[in-house]
Image (cartoon, rainbow, N blue to C red; front, side, top):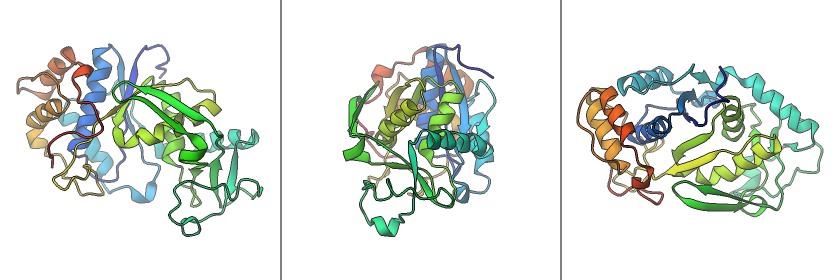
Length: 292
């Protein structure tokens, strides 16, 4: 199904590493309302390339949640684990252009150094059973986030050559998200501010592949009482689907939107979309208050 013709194609792309929580709901609702308010399409993609971390039953749980909140995608849902050959073909294309290299460094060898020093860049190692990294340049990438404003990173100094495929063959999030956003015709990305620092990497990779640049909006994160972002690692509570209307109302309040009446989720979403105003979303990367 081609989405190339729509002026706005958005998406919600959860990873099935645990139950969806309130932070996931905020992202799903914001991405949905933003797309629908602009007569756009909204797609659902399951980001499950990290196969060992898939939580049993969580893909099914995501679908049940979407239904409970009346978040209906405009097209068939895709699973990244079914698309590994597409990612392999892109790595091969980059290899032929001399833009990637094999890397034998382990985490232990690199220590806590977050920026890869390029140790294997010129070694010409065989690609078999090694991690694959993409080369970056000493170049600053800037983008204007619709909510967070202008954001700039120097690829070499701030990020370093980054991994596209791990040594165990697992495709990295950076590669899969760029390829799938392109193949699904995504134009607008609405996601959590914890992914802001990945955006320059993804823009760079998209440039190397000749993909059009996307519009980004990074939402402030919901925090728990300990001041940690709601996440599966921090054992955020799964969504209680018996409370779907109330949770939907809370998500819209967290997003600073005008109140909607408690009703069926479908009616509430229709009202939320009709009065959606991204100018009302709180600025900054963290939401005030605590969430479960």
